[in-house]
Image (cartoon, rainbow, N blue to C red; front, side, top):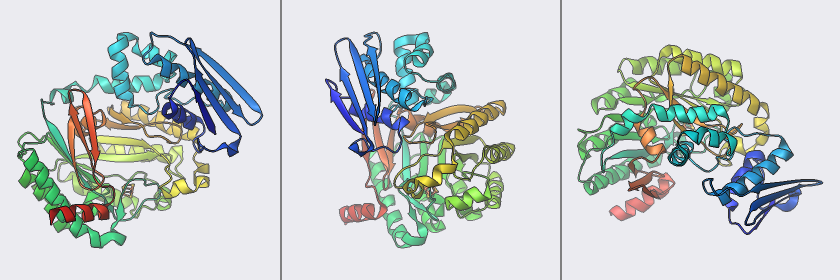
Length: 459
Ligand code: SF4
């Protein structure tokens, strides 16, 4: 599709809206016979979509009472012509490229109790999604109360996994192939953790999150080096939450759990992603369903808060198998359950072959999520954080659910940019939040580049 803009420069937003309706389109390629022209005048925005031999046109009058009204008018005109062409109605409406909770909060500060009405009428967000935003905001205050001036959290990245899942688009390396890097990586990571603590004068983070990858997949002594380095480098008197992602159930061992307990970890994630054997096999996960239940039982003895992730939309998952898996997990009564929508990126193996998704119907994914949210609500789990990624099947979201008073504070602070997060390790993002301004800097993307770059610096 070729996009022509006249008297406006909203290409980023407009492309994102187009991709909601035509997810696999290249917005710089004319060969598909589609041309979109968006013009902005003093009193209206106009979009014309030429799709081979069909033409769609929509005009939106300018309303200066709306937030960022020129951008809004262009986005809305584009949304309407794409809707006219495809008949699709994405549930988040015009909310693309924004963090829904931040956007909701922004609108609330402008429109007060008219916010829900504005979101539905102008931004075309479905009532279900508006309710999610409002529910999430309603349970947050206790976590916001824990924030203090200049407080921060710490994120440590260990980007290795036992093998690579087919749907993965994270920067993560299989330990089968990259064993030679792990020792060196941990050495350099520990140096960075120490240097960061010196810069912060050893002050206590409020929360710590060791993510990846699957941090629990590295050898015990290296894993212990990382957690020991964190606890030796920082005063942890203010730290009330210390999470380790032990995403792959087969990496949860008695030794790892003992190390975590010894150094003050109090929250872990064990993520089967599905409780269907065929789904797991096809996804390239190397664990069985029994591995998950065994890991969960082992971790329960250590009294961690446990988070369990599921993904809606994996190939061969049916609504029945998805809901059955969720019910089995609810019976275990974890503190948190996170429901992801499958998203497709070019870097992931699935993304390279669109036909693999042909058995994943967006409407089925919508039904899975709709039922899952209802079941979780009835089981006394509350949505507490939400984020969206482009290119999810059915244009949905990822939501963390928690039992009362059991939300993960790190997820709230990080996702909604409420607090400074210092990131250590490859591809770890540092976000400095100062007086409402956010400065982001990202660590070197790949582990081997991180080793080369930081190893050289430390010589
Ligand atoms: S466990 Fe997570 S990070 Fe690791 S390969 Fe699978 S999806 Fe990627």
